[in-house]
Image (cartoon, rainbow, N blue to C red; front, top):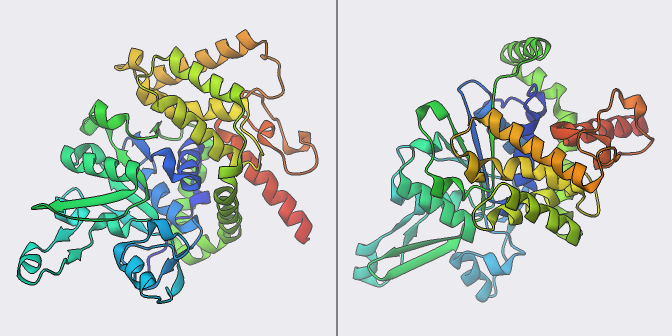
Length: 396
């Protein structure tokens, strides 16, 4: 019997954490996400819950690499060989895999093993897939990533960036597709991640405990309810999670078609330059994350508030001028920068500003709102809440 997973949308607060995970779910090429926070703040719960709302994927039956039958360019050697023989690749639907990498994992367990003795004796190349094979087209989750061996962290980041796992032993090599969403969580009290690895994560955020007493009260009630009757609790959120899963599917299908105006690229470059981010990963990743957010919000092009929202995830671990600052100081510096840029553009009173406040849903126009209907990190979840209202009203 499979254990029940606490529903993603039942998590109280932590909208920024949930939004960051969803951005990567829409477009894994963003480069993964690093979540830093003390124990008990819902990091692992959110990651495991995310896997339950992700759409199912079509895979080749019995393929250890979860190959997509219609993606010829990224088939594993076994599937490609079958296809070249004229065989039909049998397809099944499967939940997107969630692979958890233990701190005790060896290099061979992660990347896989080439059986050299078999190769030398028979000439037959035999490869035993590792965790990177199982995680292909899914999620690779590393808890306490800051305690993982540096060599393994480097392997994970290289595979995540290239989409290929290359194993070489004694001048013999084997490669297979390894495209996955990399999620790392860590407790800053147990040590920091090295800067050269930190920059390789596309997004990062610091998670804190929910401060509002009312929200904390709701959090406790939900957890008690889940522990008492997990089936009934999960059932209560099943419709919401189905709607979210559909939204993710639509966003993944349309993200590549989102228009990227030149002005938004200029804004991303300006933001990266103002914080003195080294290299060019910052502005590139801002645009990728903004595009994913626009897709989730059903927008046809990237807007200013999408870029600014994306920058909240992309810039904190790349701000070289504040390398020793706390998460609160970094967040305040970014908000000051956003206000300064809006003032420079004369847009402080614009209806497109990301700091626009909404008192109630009665203030919203009819129809599903775009990004302008929400504020700050609630942007996405305000949109989903309103879409749920419209969906429910149509059914009734």
